[in-house]
Amino acid sequence: MDIRLTENAVHHIRKMLESHADSIGLRLGTRKSGCSGYAYTVNYADSIGKDDRVFEAEGIKVIVDTGSLPHLNGMTIDYTKDGLLHEGLEFINPNVESSCGCGDSIAFRRLS
View 1: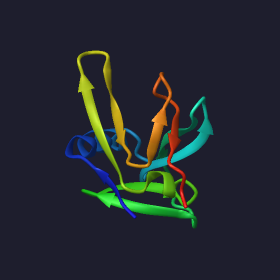
View 2: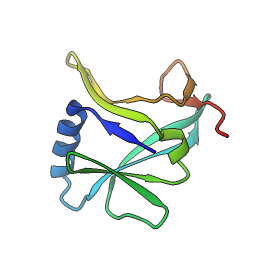
View 3: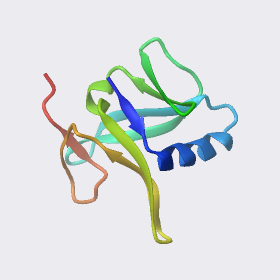
View 4: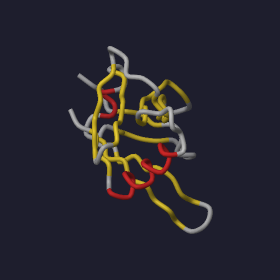
């Protein structure tokens, strides 16, 4: 099981975490939502639960609950900035089968 961060993502997430002193890492997950079925959730993590899996890159902890892990396994997180208005984390996920037109909702391949 693996989740990777690009150099740009490491730099951006490190700056985000520095502004939230109580955070120990980035919490990443999925929830049912939207027309395609699921959406990503991204929050600051203040603890690690017994059902969490921790991935670490360049000293940054990415914490994922075991329920979301099958959807996120093998994903790469990047940070992109395109002009003045478009910037943010980009999820490059081999488990995504499709997404809706707005890009906020995703469908995953059937997990066995």
